[in-house]
Image (tube, rainbow, N blue to C red):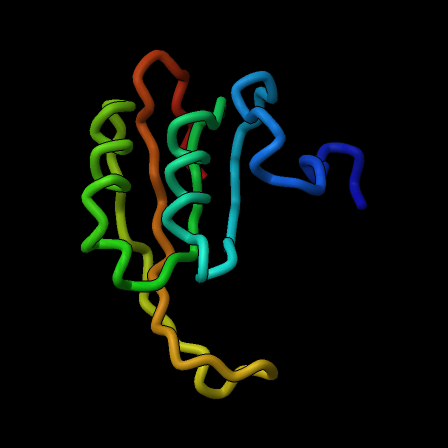
Length: 110
């Protein structure tokens, strides 16, 4: 693995993210806990932008939207995909979202 890429811990909810300054956070969380993971990442990430792969039903989760608004960030759905033909088939349809323009951070275009 390149030196500028690292994995953060093994027990996600026992780690803090705020002390890890990075440019980009990418996460494809377990869909059974996607809301909890998204909320933690959005609230704690110390980064320029976040990419999340979430079930499309994330749009119905007011807690996720409140976290984005609380960080005074913007978001954009980059695409919608399904895993019907994947090696490990799943019925879920997923959005890839980008969260950016956090208050107080220098923003970089990727």
